[in-house]
Image (cartoon, rainbow, N blue to C red; front, side):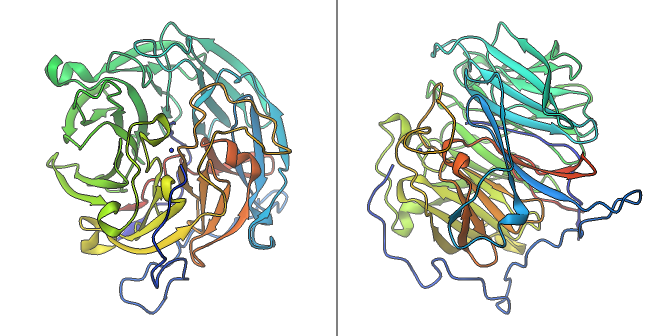
Length: 445
């Protein structure tokens, strides 16, 4: 088994209410037993390297993007924080993204950050046109912006930084991803997922995007906002921008997802389900469904906007031993053992109660956080691992969870008002590594 180093580029995706919760079981919130069979050890990331020229150490920052702003938090301060302490940002930068941030992607080698913002399609929503901007990570200056005639959503960038994949938005009536230039954001091609299947079977609402670790494939998730039951994940070849296969159908519209490093499995959250499904990327079949209501957790239903995605957050640990899934109605993050044979038949091992509430809207009653949410303000949630796997960041609650102690150890206030975030590490003022917003596995074979 080989564990790939943290990628030098990043990907992305975008864009849940309080309810009675079941009593905690013995594993609830407990630290993992390192001696237990199949127990997951923290990801053994390389130690921070020293710059040969000046001996500089690595600064690890978590970037968070409420509408109109960039906040950065120092991960070095988390270890010294008292449990649940609200930490101050080390950086706060105003950005022209007040129209609503939809996704974030990072090109580490090029020292560039990309944010999609504005409208998310025009078929069933009226949020205006979509836009894209580039930020120079060395100066935090916006180097260009571009506004399109189409919507935008959770974009991704290839590891070499040469191509951006920008979905037309969850409210779009098509199945199109645009291939944009990192030079100025201009569209240079499209991927039409509808062309791969018959029109009657085509999912609408291009929403979330992941590029594989080696950059060979791009994974395209349609939300199917019209509820037509067209719920497949599409895989395209980045060399040709042609769709080569489809996975599913899943139970309903596709929401946040993650893949393993070997690209054999996808863990998919879907509309209205508290839990997730497992798809085989080789056969295209759904091989498992985990429904948390069968384990005693309450699902109030799917009739209100903030309940359409009760598990709007899923993250695979870099060592691929554990899968974390959000449960917004119950203010809980569930932990599953996915090591070995359990990768296809996950076993729940812990339930972690959040300190921050998942009810209500972003940008309400959070002193010290400058933000005014443009739209889609309900706290759906998001999950993202740190590069070394030690921390799990919970969007829309602000919790920073220690994955070894299995408890909240700090809070990033701006992260209670955003579900768009990513870790970027710096050395001598330049980006050194980045996580992915949708944390994928790093075990390659």
